[in-house]
Image: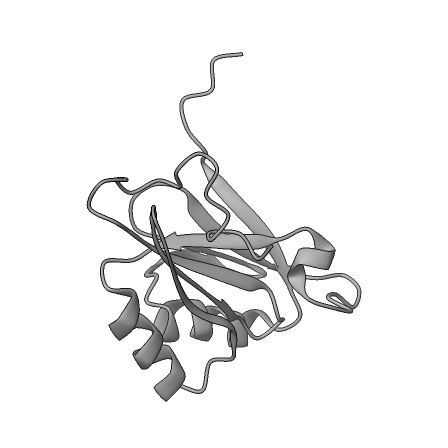
Length: 136
């Protein structure tokens, strides 16, 4: 197998319109395509695809359901301040680590979104052994 890169992540949501509103207007991912019960959002790299769930979802946190979205941000302080002003739930506030700073917020379905601002030395990807990016 010759995988070039991750193309998309699909998550089931309880309310498609509410989730599209959240990811586009609150988080800032532009809508690439939306039709019927399918919405694609993103900039460069992988696309986030939202699709209505066929049954109730998320009886606990998203880590218990196996889903955490990771977003790399330029300024985590201003990103978190902006999200708090929009009443987004913060699961874990900003923590500093050698590889960078991390915070976890929740979407309307309580899926965790890990925001990561890399330090100048680590680049835009999670560093090996860095646990701040994950909810653990």
